[in-house]
Image (cartoon, rainbow, N blue to C red; front, side, top):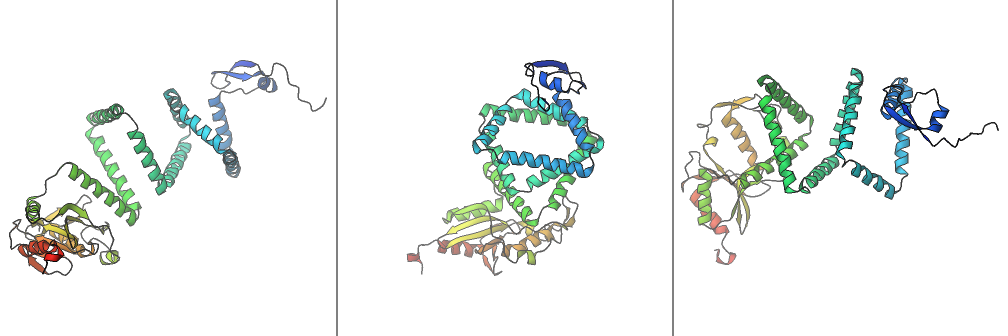
Length: 386
């Protein structure tokens, strides 16, 4: 009858052929071959190439409409799947990717596909990947998710596997630097430095502040864990505090940004283009019965006669060291979180009972002897104070 589709008993049988493009052996069902005897009969890789060529040869408007339609259909199909099916697909894909041969085969397929692109298509692919990467990492939730996943993945591994990975990374790094030429090494460092500068310039001041805080937290952690000794001025203060029973903590930073800080310190006069961070790491936090007190120990670097030399920072800015120190000191009244704050001014690097102690808030001075007695008094029980 007209319009009827005749299904042969042989239609489900397998036919062995060769790909019309690359000659690789392929298998198709007899029914497919019967309905399209003249071909082309292509392997999976060549079918993908042929489809890409067909799409890329479409007029721009048709190509855009086709891709949108295809992506919408895929998205709709996925949304219509049940939660159980989505989980099943996810679990199946995770299991498949545990197969190293499969991962290597997929990586080779991607590399071969990229090599077969025209130079224009390669640039388009790179641009698309970079835009997608930027969009992904600009989402704070994605950053946190990937960080947590990487951390969980690392700590879920046996200690032996962690050591193997670290050893391989270290050996690879050593081998790389042993074989790279001085010219290539210098070129690589310049490119890395410029890339980091571009990235730094592209982020907001709030993000810069957050990154610097994280960096300082890491530095503080390393200092504590490496048991780095305080300098001699700090040691002298620590001994006085211990002798008078005054609890303290080393390296404490304020956490609240003063509402007028950006207005008061819009830019660093010594380092054009850099931002001024509204947080300061105090040398000590002192704990008394009356509350917390912040304390800095200002050594000879705060003395204009000792630090009047010209220096150059990593960005090429040249300035008198003391001027930068004085600029940072001028910010301290706005970096106290509302707490009492003082600075021991041992500008000759000698701690005596007459060493001046500056009240950061009201700019009044007392001697170190008076300051220690004041702290001792604050630590007395209320019943013994007169």
